[in-house]
Length: 438
Image 1 (cartoon, rainbow, N blue to C red):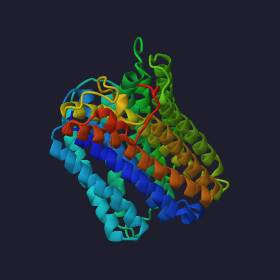
Image 2: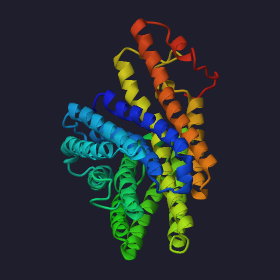
Image 3: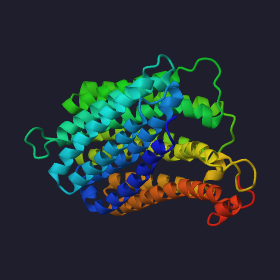
Image 4: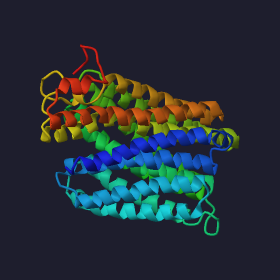
C-alpha cells in the first residue's frame, strides 16, 4: 500500500471541498432556485462533484488499487503529483465559472487533463494484473469513464465565450451522467465488492455474479445514455437508461445478498450504506419522473432532473462518508502502531473503533442525510431557504468528518511521542460514556 499520507491527503481535500460546496450553495441560493442551469449553480455542483466526491474517490482508488490487485502503484511521487493537479483543477473550474474568469476555467481543463494522464500512468501498472474479478474490472472501466468525462469537459471549458461550442443543458447533463456513473459510480460499485465482505464480515456461498453485472451494465448504460443525451436522440437515451437501470439493480441486489450473509451486528456503517442505497432509488424515481414531465412542462421537468442528480450525488456522498469512518481508521491504525501507539484509552490493544468519536459519527450521518435531502427538495421546489439549509448541513458534515477522524489520531501520535497517558490524551475533549461500543 502507499504511504498513509497519499490517501489521507485526498480525503482531507474532499472534506474541504464539501465545506466549500456547502458554502457555495448558500451563496448561490437565489440563482439556483431561479435556474438550476445557471453558471453559479453549475459552479456549486462542480465543487461538490470535483472537490468533494472526485477527491474522495481518488483517495480510495490510490489506497485500494494495490490492495485489490496485490501490486504497488507505479510511483508514490506520481500519486502526489496527481493529487496536486486534481486539487488545483477541482477548485479552479468552479471558481472560474462562478466568477466568470474564462482564463481560470480554461486552465482548469488543462490541469484536469494533466491529472488524468498522471492517474492513468500510475494505475496502469497494478491494473495490468489478470483476473481479480469485478473490483479490478471496475477500476479499469472507471479510468475510461474518467478519460471521457475529463476530455469532454476540457474541450468545452477551453472556450466559454461560445466561439467553439454552445454548452447546452443536455450536453452538460451528458457529462454529468458520465462522471457520476461511468467514473465515480462504477468505482464505488466495484470497490464495494471488496469492502462489503470485509466490513460486514459477509462470506457469500457459491459464485456471485451480481457484482459483475452491476459493473458492466452501469458503465455501458451510462455511456449509451450520455451519448443519447449529447445528441438529443431519444432511442439511445431510453436504451442507455434501461441498461443503466439493470446495472444499478444488480448493485442493489449485491448489497442485499451481502446484508443477508453478514456476520457483524448492525452498526453505523450499515446505516450509511443502506441510506446511500435509498438515495440511489430516490434518484432513479426522480429521473424517471423528470423524463416523463420534461416534454410537457420544461420548468418542472428540469427541477425533477436536477433533484435526481442531487440524489445520485447523495448516493455517492453518503457511501463515501460512511466508508471513510472505516477506511481512515484502517489507514491510520498502521501509522499509529509504527509510531509506538499500541494501546487504546482503556489500556487494551489499540482498535479501529478507538480512533474516532462514535457520537460525532452519528451526528455526521444525520447532517449528511438531512443536508442531501434539503438540497434535493430545495432544487426540486425552487425554494431558496431549503437550499440554504442543505448548504449549511453539508458544510457542517465536512467540518465534523475532518475533525472527528483526525483529532484522536493526532492526540495518540503526540502521546506516543511524549510518553503521556493515552487515556487522558483521548478523553480530554472527547468524553464518552463508560459503555461505549468497541
